[in-house]
Length: 325
Image (cartoon, rainbow, N blue to C red; front, side, top):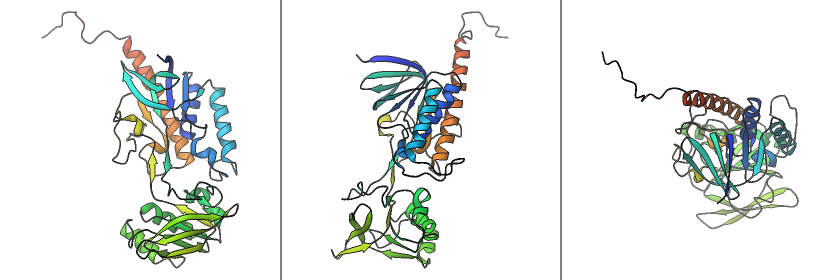
């Protein structure tokens, strides 16, 4: 039987949201553990350069992640590299089930993040950060006055294409169908933008390069014709997948798996909070993840205080006779 370890707050996920939550929990003198399956920092740690985090001009994702990890530890947070397979709630205790131990908390913060959906083609992983990106706001400025490509046809692909078109020389939008799935107003804006050209009914079969991205191998889905397109950058918008499958219905989510919270980061399960990319929110940036983590930790602190106060109150079902008049 795995060992059970007890804390005030169990934080599942060690990205920016989780590390910020740990920092704020520690400052509140709460014992906290961060459970991270890979590396502290989450998506940030694999980002080459970060230029849009307030107060920091330019920093590597690795360096920012290290500073956040060190800050959390300095306030007493424990960081454990452990993949969580299940969450349970038993007698108000929130329990994260890992392979090495059970992590029990009075409150829990889910900061498991998510992943941009991948194309799953040769070269995609190899050239991530060297021409392949999933975030226009993060990386668009690196391609100023260059030729880039965008893959996708939904709102995200169209919105990000319009954003990127303001700074690049030329943008080619590759879509697997003969019409977009995004909103009509975004379609109209993209189709009328002189810097954006469309390649319809086509898929990217391979990312080609030599130390950095050089071009894309395309295939027309209707004719089967092959074509090579030179490009300096590839932005992929074919969906985003929140890491919430292991929750197995414990908290309410949207149809596509995002955890639903209120403005205090409370989920449908009392004492369980969500922060960062895994929750339903309009924008996913490092600064919003940090904000979510801070709010979740402060709300969790108040919840723990309320539960402690409640536990010392006389039972509402006292055997004392009641005045029924």
